[in-house]
Length: 441
Ligand SMILES: Cc1cc2nc3c(=O)[nH]c(=O)nc-3n(C[C@H](O)[C@H](O)[C@H](O)COP(=O)(O)OP(=O)(O)OC[C@H]3O[C@@H](n4cnc5c(N)ncnc54)[C@H](O)[C@@H]3O)c2cc1C
Ligand code: SF4
Ligand code: SF4
Image 1 (cartoon, protein in one colour):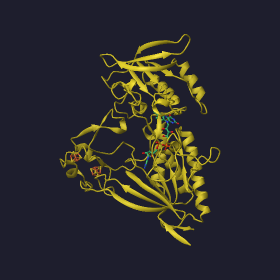
Image 2 (cartoon, protein in one colour):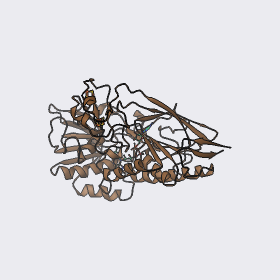
Image 3 (tube, rainbow, N blue to C red):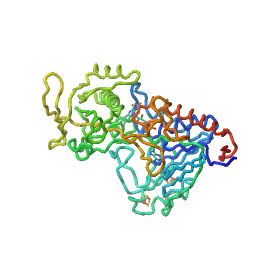
């Protein structure tokens, strides 16, 4: 018996894991739909400055993959869309996908940005970690895909200027969400991670102190097209002369429900310290750590290089952060080197290396299992990393646990291979002319 599905594969999440899996599955002739909840694909990687340990430019690696996926004959991308449910029956998957309103007709918009230039409303720019400003109608960032504007209806004052200036009749103030139910042969979950909130450890006052930043904000400060064009601290635009990193600021701490190691924070902090030393030649950088976990290829050498550059590593537990009258953060730390002692040290800027939390909670959406830490459960510790506990549902990247980019890309290849093998086992052949595929049951 046969029936038809709209696409062979649903990929939920258009970060580097989802894009790589989409390209690899699409290359095998299968038709893929990528659903991304943000207005652009690219995930966290597209906002990074450079990547450890090579210090290659992150967007130079990520942008071509975004473009390749977007232009792939077998890959369709829906951005600013969410999957409301995924159900499995008789070997097929049926998913309800909700297209959120952009208040801009996607088909009409030519990405000219004329609307942005005339919009009178300034709002903190989420892509820049809220350090810069964007307009109420905007394209999320320079190399966003798609290059389509998005109108932030909550901040729009309905002045009508964007509508007047738009050459493509693209503005649609009363656009509504659209729901579609689509069918698939297999599903790949690549929903990544989110950083823990800045107030997870209230004693660090991360949500109150203006010069206490999260590491994704520092990635933007270091990026060539970042919010200020160079590294300046938010309170007064001064070039920081001393910066501290607090590692495990939310990881390996049972009291806040995150007992696990977030894996990438040590290396991300070391990378940023090296980059800051280049951007600010006179800066002193201190990294407060419990243990340094330099687990990947070339990572230990990267750590040793940072030490030989003069970056100070202090083994100690940060107890508290306060600030003086000029917003200089003051770190109270229990130093655990030699004779243990408590010190208070003042810095121009402090960076909290927060925990990586699961980017998506499947409960209510899909019956796939998660582990105690909230990340997707793998079928078995020694099976392929792509297998979940649900037949036909695969995963890659940080959706199953915090992970660096090389491991994420390797897992995406594995997820693509497992997905293709699974479709073949169902008798689904690639290369059918239309998006609808024959699936044997
Ligand atoms: C400060 C910092 C610096 C880093 N630097 C490096 C580095 O130098 N080198 C390195 O190797 N790694 C680095 N990393 C790690 C890197 O960010 C991750 O390895 C990588 O982003 C994982 O990719 P991913 O696609 O699995 O997840 P993500 O990048 O999180 O992408 C997941 C995507 O899924 C989308 N999504 C989530 N839920 C849904 C849903 N329900 N529906 C639709 N879409 C959804 C998200 O919007 C997102 O676009 C760094 C991390 C941090 C925090
Ligand atoms: S109508 Fe709204 S989005 Fe358009 S220009 Fe005016 S404030 Fe900006
Ligand atoms: S909405 Fe109109 S003015 Fe704005 S980028 Fe699109 S085409 Fe240009």
